[in-house]
Every structure is written in structure tokens, then in C-alpha cells.
Image (cartoon, rainbow, N blue to C red; front, side):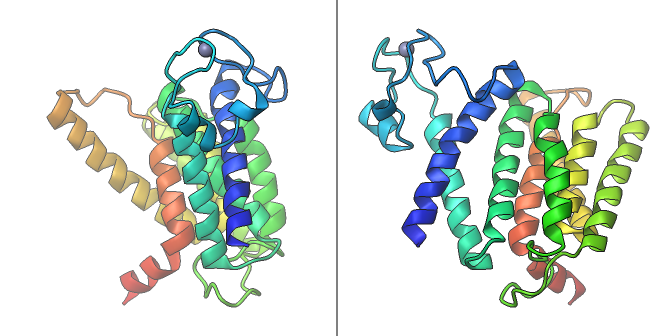
Length: 256
Ligand SMILES: [Zn+2]
């Protein structure tokens, strides 16, 4: 079971690479099939095996010899490992499917936002719906005991989370006058729909903390001034992943 889930994670990870490259460039994610971004030569199926092909090809295109970004195998491996962690923490069941979709979305959002400073609606809008629907009967509440499978997020909690996440970041967007974009608003509505309102608060806290640390770090290191734009989506995504796996433990520690 562990091996199947890991391989499934690698294959989906390979698809995530397609999404990360094509979504911000407005290319269809279904066709054409994968091609080298430099020489445009179509990639043969046997050169498109997650993780393995990168190692066999030593990170170079078979046709033109151009370096393939290390991002490709990293995304595949990361997605595979996260799927394993989800299986380990939440156990086997149908709830794995929306959780896999959620964590993969966070990976895609992080890499697209880092490069393009956008968070595509084609991820967040369906994400809001999937979170809202699956929270009532499938999604485990990250703040309750993982081992009891009946502790779902619940529709009301999910709906309040959606409104709180979207509303809070809508207010932040107005107050910061463009420092926060519409993508962040929809992303946090999705996070709330998947994990409930408590998660919105914790994700906002962790994201702001990480963002501040990174901001100070960049100012000291690169001499960037305070007006330098740093995309906030990646910090919210990391906060969401931390909250999904350790939100309950963090809350327990904080209240204790
Ligand atoms: Zn090439």
C-alpha cells in the first residue's frame, strides 16, 4: 500500500509539473503532450517516467542536451512524500482523495506564485467547491483526534472557514492597498473550506510569521527595501501544510 501510494504521488507530481509550467502561460494541460521547453522536441513516454527519467538522463534533454530544471524531480518527490505522510497521519480511505488534491494544489500554488506572482482561479475556485462538499463527510478535522475517522470538518465549520478566509484576506487586501491580491483571497477561502475556521487563523499566523522572517532576511541579505514585493501565497501554502499535519498538536501546545 505504501509503495502504491508513493508511486501514485510521483505520477501526480509529474502532472503537477505540467500544471506549474502551463497554467500561468495559458497553455492547455491536456494537449499537446510534454515537450522540451528549449528544443520543443516531444518527450517520449520512456523519458517521462517520474523521478527515474531525470536520473537516467542525468538532468539533460535527450534531444538537445539542455539542462532540465531540478524543480521537476523535486516536485515529483515532494508530492510522493506528502502523499505518504497523509496516508501515515490520516489512514487509508476515501478521504485521501480530497487531501491529495489539497496538498498538490498547495505545491502548484507555491511554485506558480513564486515565479509569476499569481494564484490561478482554476485551482482555487474548484478547490473551494471540493473543500466545501467533501468536508461534510470525508475530510478529517486537523484539530481533532486523527485516529477516529468520524471527526470530519463538517459543513458549517467549512462554510464559516470559507467566509472567514476570504473575508479576512479581502480586508487585508483593502488595508494593504494592493499588497495582497485577489488570488490570496480565494486561496484562503479554499483553505477555510478544506480545514475549517480555526485553520484560517493558524494558517494566517504561520504565514505572516514566515513572511516576516523572510522579509527581514531579504532586507538584510539583499538590501531589498520594504516595497519589494514578496509573493505571500507560498507562505500561506506552507502554513496550510503545517496546519494540516500538526495543527491539532500546535493548538494543544498553545492552549497548554
Ligand atoms: Zn531539448
